[in-house]
Amino acid sequence: MLVECYDERGAEVYEIIIKQIFQDLVLGPSVDDLRAYVNPDDPVFVLAIKMKKTSKAITFGEVANLSYVKADDITRIIIDNENYLPNILKQLWKRFSRDEIYQPNRYQLEIEGNHVDLETIVIDDPHSNLQRRIYDAIFRILPEGFKIIKDMSTDDIIAVVATDELIADAWIEKANEYIAELSGK
Image (cartoon, rainbow, N blue to C red):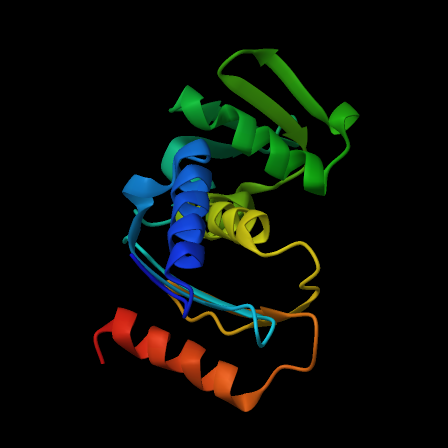
């Protein structure tokens, strides 16, 4: 972790704030490295965070068996991994009303019609979940009045430039430097 600031005490304070927020959100193990630039004279805050690699996205078909029963015109879903049941229900409720989903027992769901195409729907994406948690941390870290934010994130590096004025080119260059450092280029 590197926090750049001309004021040494200010850098220490921001480092403490960042560590505390990461600890509160249990993000420490999910982050490889971090770069921050703070300059109170030019109201700017640049933050770049490199995420650790996550497991691949989980599709409906990987945690449940879907079959169409033509005689009853019902798609029967047998849950293989109960841990994903809340995510499965959440995805189904986006597509169907709760009344359309019949759950005769804990491991079985039924939907009227042929819906075996649901197999390809992503029900859990650790990468986007981690990104969402990191953005949450960033918005907690940013100074209160900094409402102008430029998101410069790449695939595994989340980077933002925040200010309460117009964003200067030098600040964007600083963010690009951090992105290059963190990506090893």
